[in-house]
Length: 78
Image (cartoon, rainbow, N blue to C red; front, side, top):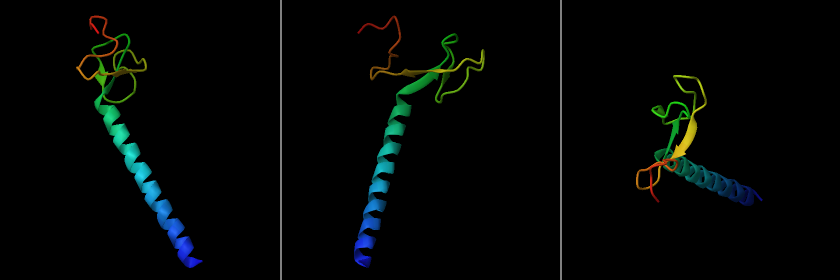
């Protein structure tokens, strides 16, 4: 019975470790392709969500495409 409890505990530790490692990789990848900007002040670009330092509005998440253009750029031709 002791051996079985030890095996269950070891399995849980390994699974939790693998899940937390996968989550950290996904967060890092997202950060590299995302920035936050103010709808009223597009010159404001931050790496984290927050408030615009000019007007105090919530910053909006923008994703950068692989070619370096922002998805909402009206001048960008697909």
